[in-house]
Length: 406
Image (cartoon, rainbow, N blue to C red; front, side):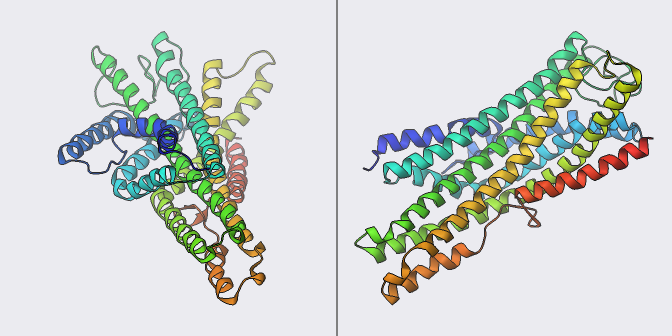
């Protein structure tokens, strides 16, 4: 049973609507046949947002980091903002510059949803798209909580940061920053507060939206590989064997090219994400170790850290850890699906075919035999083994930091 065009288009809109809305607001969603005026307007919006985040979040926070260098607790408080901001800027710039490379992937997704397919193939695509949609909603929800905690609580005089006279001598602001002007005077304070909030919101949307878009791309490819595997298993059920095999070979090569394009776009982002997660994991381990030690030494009823700050730190850590796990999980799923195609080809009863048909089947077998990875900077495969090695390495630095403190 084939799916109607109306149903197929509705499925396509449902699969990409949330990601398209978020990335279009940022100006990094590519469009077919974009006019010069639309391109100019989009580029201006991107440049304005990048400048707001750069001049009111990144530069002041890096300046503050230089002033408090050597104070471990203040550095941790600073880096939990500065590193994600820098990472979000890199993602924003890459997505902006790679719009032409992303467009063929979006056209591929649209064609896959709109082309004729069986109900079984549609169900597989819906299952993968639903998983990507759930991850998108969860990612934006957690990021929204973090942004609200950062921007709302300081208005009521509740701090979620590590405060010192050196970093916060006057009125509270969401981020640990240092400006060349007196930010505590009105209306400079209000303007700074609003622009910091806007910059944080932009970076949060970019950071989460880019990862969610990666999930849409990878899960779609995984769904297509799963459908390809099912068609390979059922090759002997078709009368026009050579025609169906030729279609599957072309489809497999198309998916391999798509994976390579995705890897080229996201390789630098993933490398940066691994590095900054490793740094923050070590620093957060040091922070939690310090909190536990101080809690034992001070008393059994009071915490040496405020509850709002503890909630924010836990939320931030869970968010960063979830994103890094997500990178490795989708990479692992991609490897598994590629291996599934190879195994399906090997298990096919090729020895019952004529020699010419069996020889043609080797094309899929040879292509699928080489594992396809998402990589971090073309250096490390994004798999669960990579994540475990990263956690092991960062965990070793935690003990070094704790020993240095003592």
